[in-house]
Length: 343
Image (tube, rainbow, N blue to C red; front, side):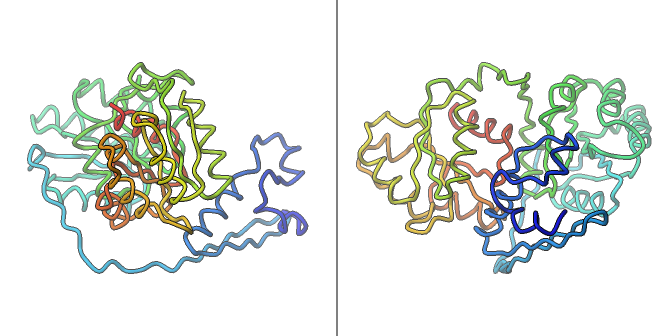
């Protein structure tokens, strides 16, 4: 990138002229959103770039150490069951396998999709089937959809096949599910997410911009509590596109006041940012839970935050929240969570 553009890279809607001319599509919001998230987490982000050579971003965070160890109990229905992990990164295979073993699952792993197919057939023929498959989406030796299709031909439709990916899967989700993918999980994988996807695999199908009947939010009213204007605009547009009527509160105090003044059944759900200057999301949730109107006091509240560690999720649930969504927002995961809560 040019030296002049580097001065503006974190501004909204700014794009390098050479990039635009090259035909690569984009809005110029990515780096502005990144900067906002880094700022909210108390970190710094800097850029060093030279035209024709490359670009280096450096992000620095102060991370506190957890003062307690979270111990996960085994999943009874999967005790002693086998699972196969396929990823061309050895460290990922070993990490996921270790988590599986911690919850009582026998884990095998391979760095080859072709070998994954062979192992699936071998396990099936021997009567010691894998009860779950966790497969990286981008591996060098075979297309992910083709891998799933071939495994499905061997094992049938009942066993969950979970795709592990660091990329946005919305563009290929319909084709992938038709091929037999049960669920998608984002990297890095956390134990809580692994447990959830193994016990309640996601089967929602999205076709273009059209959602299944159980994900129709038309007329539902949601209170979006977010102090960052850019994040407000992005989240509001996503929600409106899904059919929600969106009201915005710029901090926790305003959110509590809106809920106190609203009719009993005015709002269906609250999306609550955690880190806000006047009253944070935890405090606002506790205040809403004390309202005298029982229906308002028990309205579903979903945390929305860039801090996605286990202790943050625990704090959200302890404050009275019903769900947890990580930033940056994954649209399909957001809609699935809202559908689940509203159901």
